[in-house]
Length: 137
Ligand SMILES: [Zn+2]
Ligand SMILES: [Zn+2]
Image 1 (cartoon, rainbow, N blue to C red):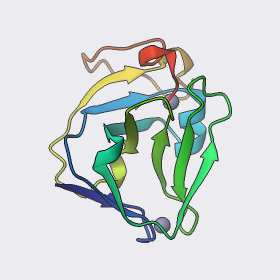
Image 2: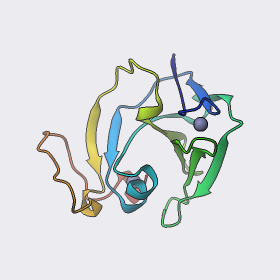
Image 3: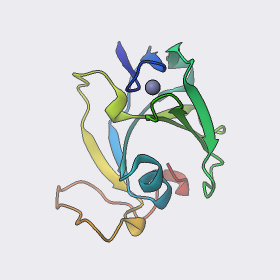
């Protein structure tokens, strides 16, 4: 079973089910919120169990057309979750998982919004101008 958490331990979780492979999102909101691109896996909402959530806070993702909110640790600042209420899955920042994860990066989202300060390496993975269902994450 996968486990993970923030830098300081005030948010800890486990995932009691399968994890999706990792997608890199280049959208404006992910880059601001994560400090650069996001790398997220996802699980079914009911499979994500919070073991410790005393640090967990949520902020709306202002330009999200999926009305998503983003979950972070207010004690250490780690970015952890992306949650769109209409979806059955919740995105989890892959960097917050305890290793080894066994996951792989399988694609890029919102490359139309990629920053001008980096090159997209030719990694052979699919690139999408926007995200699946046109929803930002
Ligand atoms: Zn923390
Ligand atoms: Zn994004």
